[in-house]
Length: 280
Image (cartoon, rainbow, N blue to C red; front, side, top):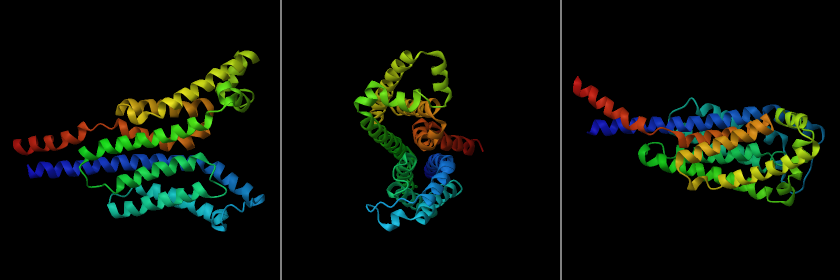
């Protein structure tokens, strides 16, 4: 019995580590996806330096901007290859600190990629502090917390769109439908009249508001349903608007995958080992 419990704990810790590495991989992909635009913006900031007295010198420094990005990216990358709790805690703290700096830096605070990655890294750090706990009791809390974070982000997106311009579709029509060079909008412009395109923009904008409003309640939905809904909406955002948005949503997709984890595998490992030992 003792051996069975020990086997289950070892298997459970392995499952926890798998979730942790999966979500950190999502953060890493988001940050790498952002790198091209990030280096372009660095060049613009260097050529046309902006000085906002609201920010202290530390949070206007180009060196700090580069260092924070490098720290966050490196920490997420190293986490994928490490299993020991103490190094993982240090890397988790490094990731949170680097991304937090980017969220309040003069030249990065308005970039949603760093915001979504920062919230996701906080979840990862929380999970790291609980390595060694029983996976059966930890997993439901981890999945629910991931959905709470996703709900919070969707709620923020919804509140930001609660304007007459979004409800009427004018904002999306001006930004995307009229001239954005992307396959969905190119196809719509070729197949619809201007009046039809304007009406489509209205209903599309309202659909975005409704879907993001629904996702603000992921934390109340059944675990797997919430994860599937979140993944559909997140993938739809990038695939139908702009592939660059995968830098924003990939870390959140990783967070959504937590709720789809199969917990039956963990329970079956010790039972299989017990049957093997008895037959031997």
